[in-house]
Image (cartoon, one colour):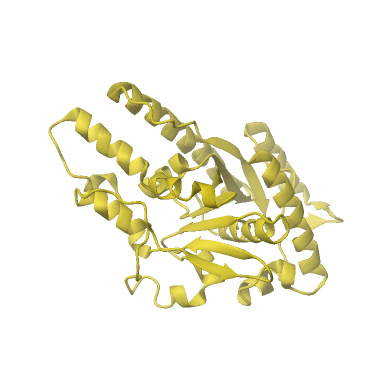
Length: 297
């Protein structure tokens, strides 16, 4: 059975996709894990572009080919039977593979407001539950094929994010160590709690038991951190300490620098970039991945 981890954030530009991408690569390349990445970022499709640049040519202006997560929600809105099949692409690295369900910009239109309306409260609750379970429906048929399934989300609280939370065993929240960015961590924690409590309420009202286990928040993940003399700058250390007091935060973090910028420009992992800064950030991601495997077993 795969461990499903959602990478979620309320704010963009905090390194969420970078974290998901590099941890996916590290799990496959260094830990020999079978990894599936779900790209649910419907604005940029950043992680899809890192693996398959051709998939995001004309992103947002062309309808993606094949079957995507959007089609699964569309089946529900059309009162059709939902099927789990989606198109999966395999990316071949240096002796390792990572599978990908690519992004679809039409996920931006996903909303419970599009569910068929009925005059039956029980039926309405069943539809709300099915909406939350849509991504999980897709993953259930894939669980035995992978060790880890990582989901990269769009940075906002939405019905797609709620479906990601439902599907995930754990959620992490990459964040910059500044007040403006990290304040969104509380929102993420609150939304996880909302989904857990909503599911509990719906199950009680329907008298059903679907095996759902509460999603666990595994912690904030410091990204693009700034150091002085090999330690966090004072302002960022203060923010790190504040996050630790308010909830979980990873001990390991990743610093900003030219290594990651060059890796992004070349659409390659920082592990394959030369230079002292890239080597430092590669080591940080290896350490972060080791910790990730412990808190998201």
